[in-house]
Image (cartoon, rainbow, N blue to C red; front, side):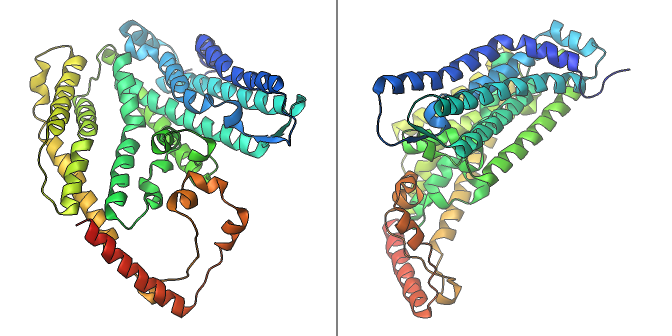
Length: 434
């Protein structure tokens, strides 16, 4: 009788096949805490105990999870890129769902081992060795959970890409587009909307469209946002972000299982068999290249000044077109494939126009915000700029100031003053951007 969902023998075989890459990533990440111990021992620190987190002990783990999860997943489902291997796995007595969940379980098992061993080695080493460290176990384990969820999501998205494609190159490209593309676009567009409004902080971007919502983009785009990576740049301890990312990972796993169940063996070695998927990827890549052009045009429209096409804009447009048609030729391995990409090309300017329209609508809504006194629930006194209060500097603020700012003042006179001041500030700043 066929096993429908899981086979321990297949799991064990897949775990063994992934051993080389799994051990490589494990050794690289586990070396980080050891190097920290050696450095601390040679330094001879004698002051008060220093608090350490997972990032302090294993900083590489916070970016290595993407190549680790992607490579392990691509290795496990490598048969999707080989016709002979694909025919073999379609002929085994286990169901396709059983093969998928057994192999995917091996990937998650290796990721769990890598993250757990690194976290425990760092924490236990700092606790047991005669070094002056204050181990923040709660933060270490929470950060390890966040990295595990990010790895789980990355592995699931990579599995989706593997079953939608038939070559390793196509799977890598599709993984990048699915995993990073949407939040990368939202990051730049929402940041521009809030900056162009003149009255709002981009830190208050609504939860569903914020790049911080997804733990993978949260970690990676934190580097772009602040120019340097520290433990404070990401919301590793935000339960809603972790829950959302885990649910997206579950949805991606379910979709990958569906694709594995429906995939035909003949799709192996065909880069992206589905023409609609190819069109979406082509449009996505070209759209991301055109983001600087879109942003410049949006700034002109939002600021009320004329827009002229410059040399840099032409470079971006030509690059987008070359990428659009080049991707199709690369996937189909034929120059004639350009003709197949022509019908979807008119969608590119339409998508860009829709994006600019949404941005202008959002700016208009933000600029029209004028709360009346009775609409203000309470007022807080906050000292400092946006970076020190809501950005990375918030981690270094004085405890007394933070507690004082939590006091809510509800006097009617104060609400009247704040409402009038907000209206004047809004009018003044809005005129500067028009």
